[in-house]
Image (cartoon, rainbow, N blue to C red; front, side):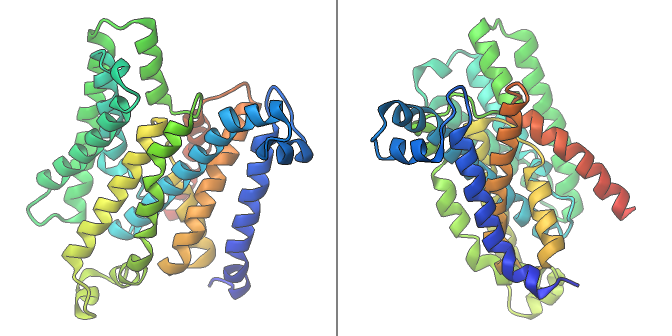
Length: 325
């Protein structure tokens, strides 16, 4: 049973952790900045610190926070949708669809026309992937059918990505871009990328009204329906929001796995199943987790973010399997 004092301090602790990690993220790098220099740089009293902060570190930090919140919230929704704590954003092929969309336009040489081409293709790929899964599993649209359709689509989209890598004539620059999307990262993120990821804030805000219906859905579809929940409509909203959050995150940073598995699962263990309590904590906790993973990667020889989250998430997933066996 969850302790009441843990529930009370969870959000303040998550906010404090995020603030500390954000300050560390702004301070470390080739040019180390103290707290005073960060303060002066933020208000342009120190021109060198201001250049480093406003052109390099602040955009990277904000993108990390936004995609961490998005992936964590998406994982929370999907775990409620499937009533399975092992569910994650990659389950339905959403991440694979986003990456496949980006890889196709990069391989075709279209990425150079505009900064928005690749993110747009990524979002479209994610939406098409989800739509395809729902169509494949339409008869009854049961959880099991959706899971199986997601597994099949993941394999198909992986084959599309492999085909582009093996059959297209790729320049060094295009190959590097594709590898960025496959590995996931925060390198060279700018204010344009922050703007691309900013709809995450609105999408995440839409989760709050769904908290109570998601609680009822966890009791079972029949029970939720008997309590006045339009289950089919609720499930459509949940799937749409989870897809949108994952697509927006992937469109800016590429594949970043396991965030949507680890963060909501840990907070569900700590705080219990009530979603109106879980939503804000998962948003803040997801942001803090990705910022922490980025710091680990930067400290370990500039490892890509996707590699760090996979190194943490792989053992965590195996532990979950063993725990539930």
